[in-house]
Structure formats: structure tokens, C-alpha cells
Image 1: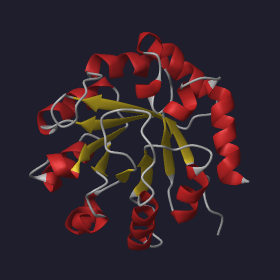
Image 2: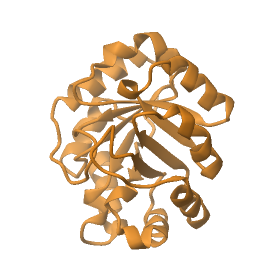
Image 3: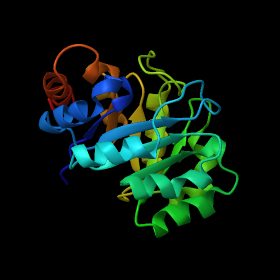
Image 4: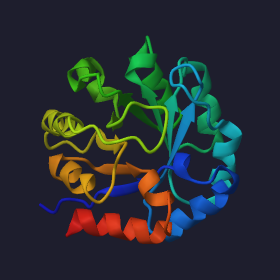
Length: 221
């Protein structure tokens, strides 16, 4: 059986905030598979970033699927606004939601893929009771809040655990966010990652198209 190529999801958190539309178009032209958008509220994480209006603007700028990651303390009241703005995947944190199964069901009722993100200290085993409700599993390989942090090596083991738990099923897709570059990406893909979220590596210096090509080469060679 042929293994599907991993998807590359440039994170716009690392792009120039004054040129997000241009960054989105550059990533699309450079071969990105989707765009990752980090939403932060200054409470769940110590930073504040994008709201629904920004997501809507990126939606107008690109045809790529939008992967919206809600790093917020109370995601429930916000999910509809981000779906209306154009999210194709909407991910909430296990650590931030009391009634997670109910929220995942609501996201899917809105015809959007429902994702769960887990911080480095949260084991994948805690998702056992909501595993079948999850379309997308985002494993954080840094503590969320800021771009450019060093990669947390134990994330590789978490990816392996998630891949073993999924078995031969097609879902949830396993994504990894944080410290993804030419060195870490091949190890993550070998462990079972389906989606690689890369921010600093893609946008901090150089052309996004070149960086994406290098990353694609690293995980397919």
C-alpha cells in the first residue's frame, strides 16, 4: 500500500503580520497543502494573535484549506465565528474544554473537520473516550504561545503512540506543530505524522517556496 505524502501546513504566525495575504499566496504558490492559523487569547497562552476577520481575509487571499488552531481558554463560544470566517479544520485544546465531545460534534455539524490539540505534558491516552469523534489530532512539539521555540523530542514518541492507536484507519489525521524543519520533519513522518505545521522554518528568512521545497524533499527522499 502506498503511503500518502505528508501534508505541509505553513503557520502564518511566523509571517509578517502586515503582509498576511501576501504570505498566504506565497505559501500556496510554493506548494503548501493548507494554511495553519494560530488564534491566541492572551489567557490560555501568553500571546494575542488573530480573530475571525483576519481568518476571513486569508480565506479571500488563498484557495488552500484553512487549519484554524484555537489556543484560547473558552473556545466554545468562538467556534461558529471562525467556521463562518472560512475554517476548514477547527482545532481546540483538550486542556481548555470541559464538554469536549459535545463541542467536537457541534463543529462537525457545521461541516468542518473537528480537531483536538494536546500540549506537550498531555498524554495521548487521555483522548481515548473522544478518539472516534476526532478528525484531526494536533500534537504540540513546543509549549504553545510563541513561534521559533526549540523542538520537544518526546513528541516523536507521542506521534508513534497516536499512530499505533489509529491503526489502519484514515482518521484522525495526525499533525505536529512546533520546531518542524529539515532535521525534525523526517523523524516525525517516520513516526506516523500526516501533517507538518512549520512556521519559523518557512517564513523566517529565505523564500517560502524554497523552504517548502526543501521540507518536501526532506520527508520524501
